Image 1 (tube, rainbow, N blue to C red):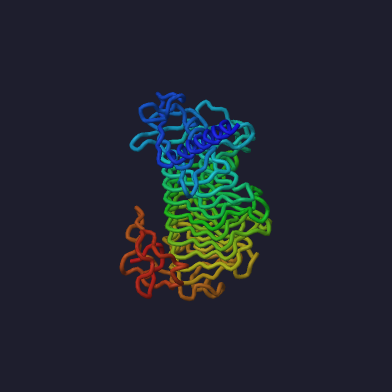
Image 2: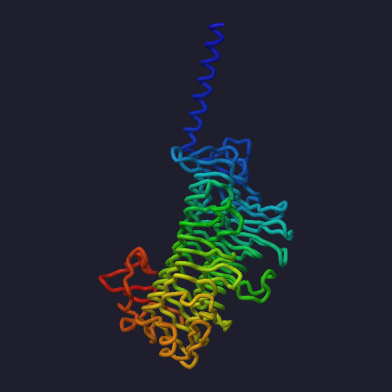
Length: 500
């Protein structure tokens, strides 16, 4: 008995040491997947696995999976987390090669949301450098996505992927996502990074191209290129019932350095012939900074509001962005109707708005809708194109919805210069100033852009915008202008997105 007991203990110790050794080894191990591989192989570069799913089922914390060039026709579920000690679990395209995850012919999605990469209740995961494409459905109850992160978790990075042709073909009632993060658990999804991706040619129906929604606390959406999609480009969302009550709000995030263009819902069956798609939308988010983005040729370039009654987007800063050539509106705050929510404590500073509302929808450059309270609009260049409408406060829902000052206003067709304040239209600068009580330190003058045709929206040295802004402090105006130069130089600050 004594010998049997001793032998059993030794066997258990050896097994435990072997398991720990495997886990330790994976913390610095790279495994490989290739189209000519076999899932019974060892996963080495000389004997790679065949499927990304087998790799996901096999690796542990700290491992890297390099996927060689080729097309992988699979929907991948990642059932493994990394951790702070061993490090991330990384799935990436092999450097210098193109690994394609293609959904052509795959069924979608059983009446739920399903992606080509699915991450549920995991942490410390990186998905990087894949082309993710061609996933669609005609079923209204099913929602395809390129990448879908859901549940709870932390430290997830979605980096340098090319996501395209993700589509709902379900006419009026369909939904799809390029990249979606849904915080559905009482444990938030935190420290989520979506950076360096290109997301395009997606038909998302009622939904968004890139979003964070629900119980998401701490996110960075940066340096992505989002274009040629038929609904909202980037969206941070609250109050949709995605997360638990009290935590159902994307919060404490940054949307920065993105380039967004050619986003329109016109022709999307869910919207018909409406110009209703935002480039960047904060729909019920809170404590978010939207900065140094280039947003052009979308329907509403930037919007901060809430679609839910008695709810708001709040404590959002929109700064140092270039916002031009929108189909409908440059920047919009407040709910779109009296029966929805609004905007509270939104600070809009140091932006350049140029030639927005090209479709002459009547929205103008800066639009103030319903239930907008405690907002600031300062240090902005507002240069209207032929439509001429610079400020559009068309409702009487709030007497003073915004404090506006230290701005430069201009209309390229002077005869069309218009301001709407508290639902009344003013055709001269003097009448607008008198009626609104706003913009005491602002100018109506040509901002003298370097080139309006290109456009190059730097201003010339003789521009009235130079050194004419108000320094609200680095925490408000930011540390960098749109180009990455110091935002504050000396005691003065320029109006608009660029600092001289």
